[in-house]
Structure formats: structure tokens, C-alpha cells
Image 1 (cartoon, rainbow, N blue to C red):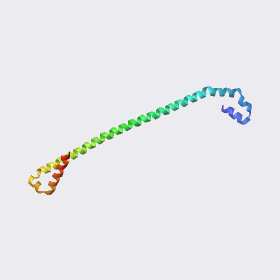
Image 2: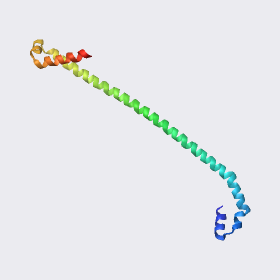
Image 3: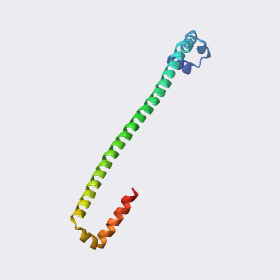
Length: 124
């Protein structure tokens, strides 16, 4: 095909385009090359669509895994926080039980703290 183009370019012969070999080449192009080109184009389009679907599925799976990891991490750290708070509360209650009741009644700050704790626990 290139040789016909080069020959036409150098000679400027208009009968060259009506040459039998050139007509045969045009027929081959319309019969085989156009079909293969359309098949390649169809395959390319389908592969692009399948690639987008695959990326969408992978993105969704990655998001679900991330969400699960975040929930598990939140649960673990929340449990650790609750355990440390429970331990701190137990230590505070234990220390208050060591103090004799007459000292508790005579100390203004401890009485106020206990009243606040009663008010806090009575709402729950």
C-alpha cells in the first residue's frame, strides 16, 4: 500500500488510483481490515467496561474492609477506655470506703462530691 502511495506521490499519475492492484487492496481493506478493526474496537470497549466494573467492585470491597477494621478498632479502644474508667472508679470508691464516716460528714468537699455522685447516679 505504501509503495502505491510513494509511486503516486513521485509520478502524479491519476491512472495509478484505478490500477487493478489498488482496487484489490481497497477490496481487501473493506472486507478484512474493517471487520477486524470493528472487532478490535468492540473488544477494547468491552475490556474497558469490564475494567471499570472490576475497579468498582474492588473499591467497594476495600471500603467494606476499611469499615470493618474501623469498627473493630473502635470497639477495642472503647472497651479499653471503659475498663480503665471502671478501674479508676473502683479505686476512688475503695479510697472513699477507707475514710471513716465521721470524717466524711465533717469534710465539706467530700460531702459535696458524694451529693453530686448521688445526683449523677439517680438519673441513670
